[in-house]
Length: 243
Image (tube, rainbow, N blue to C red):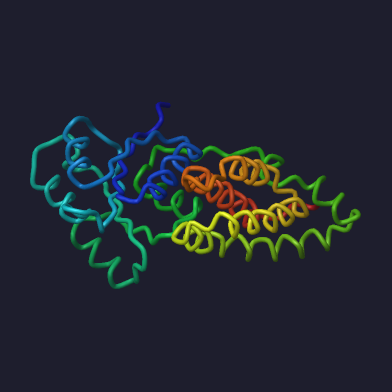
């Protein structure tokens, strides 16, 4: 089956990178637009299986882009659209649905939340499942806990809470561009990932460390880290197997 194809419009480069990496991890191709005008041009140039439109972009916001598409005769006129923005409450989400959006995505977003939303708009799409041992290595976690499965479960419970706070922490570090603080945060995260057997996340941490520079903030590597963290949380939420 061919991979679904989504148009993603967002004026935040970090958000765009997150969506590109997250969609690729989910087996979905993406075409990116940095503002509303680009989104309209790309939408007029070909059909997409769905659209993800940031509500707050310079010039044309997501709601304006969707109104233009719905009022036209282009290939994306009837494509399902997801609104994305920070701080969306239930009332705002309902208003967006009433205006033509299929659903609303509250940022910062996790891979699991994105996958759940896409499952409702891409009925033929089947989410790829990564090998469990690549996301959570039980043997590694048991070795770190001296073979005590109870300790592994307790540590992974704490780890899930740590990962839940990670998108907000990374957003704050990005806003301040504090390389030293990010390096320290990665040191602590790597230790947690090692104890819990999160091998894929450890690789993302190593890649982000390699990308650290005082000259340019590693936005793409930060986005990849958050994708890996979301995959770990999805694995932690799955029915537990005996370690």
